[in-house]
Length: 51
Image 1 (cartoon, rainbow, N blue to C red):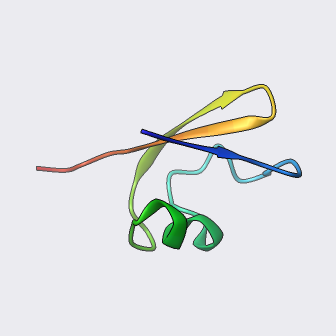
Image 2 (spheres, rainbow, N blue to C red):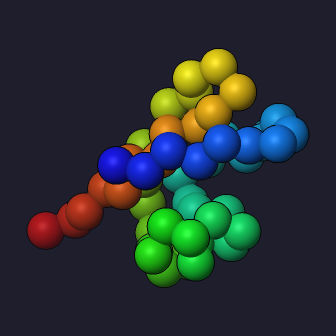
């Protein structure tokens, strides 16, 4: 699980696809699915592995 601290509100936090800005930092591919949890001014992304 990775936590990304945002400097400004992220309007797409409810979506299930990864914002391109975070892909490289989290080591994920564009379009990877994940669960998103809002914690104050931070957003916790948990990758959803399909297997």
